[in-house]
Length: 307
Image (cartoon, rainbow, N blue to C red; front, top):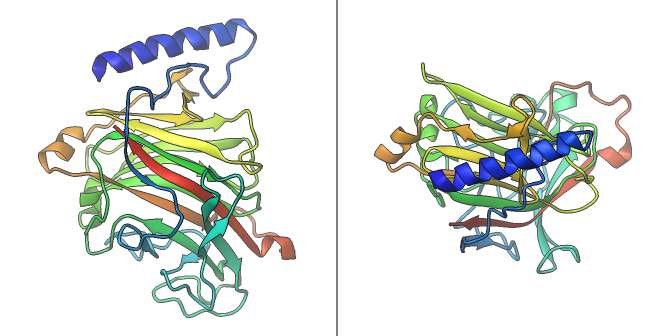
């Protein structure tokens, strides 16, 4: 894989140079090497149904706190407060005409969600969704060490939404200080052409963080886009619409070293995916909250792994 990544960096550097010579550098690289080329689909979920043998629903699988974050309570598969955010919907823009919809709804009254810190706080009385391929007891339902991970998604336009496609390592559930977090995409609903992608290795003396914002040439709330990350033996490379993204710090394609790779291999650890619609708590609450913003949703056409 090393020579492949070296060739990719060469091509991407040439593309970046051409872009700068043309008067500007896009935050989405112009490289043409498709990360799915010469790779096969080894797993996919087209979301014609929700396979509950693969997906668990509710707070993030962790023993570090309750697993809730942001301004909403993540519902179990049966819903909370009379609202179930997980549905399969007809969608003519999805490849098979079906898509997973994860919604967020403002309940606007005291709630009774177990261990949720926001039950009595009016601005936090939301129910939303988090699907994940692992459980809080440490069981990983589906996980892989490496490959090209991709989801086709459409995000909502909203003053609070915080949708994400991300991955965690299995061991991090019971041992949070070993956490490796690969945030393939985190989006803010009020920024239709910008998102963030991140590598976090939390806790311990070997903690490590990489990140970049990504400017997109299309409105991510107006249609589906492809969000992916190539993970090899030691590194990860994020992609938008199958083009590697530019790290705004280096002005080169983002190509980040996972410093805990050797430990991953020694412990036969794997990455498991999460599909989340959260609400941010670091921005002002809308006053007033418009009726049109009291319920919103994101959609996922498919999740795939190529190796």
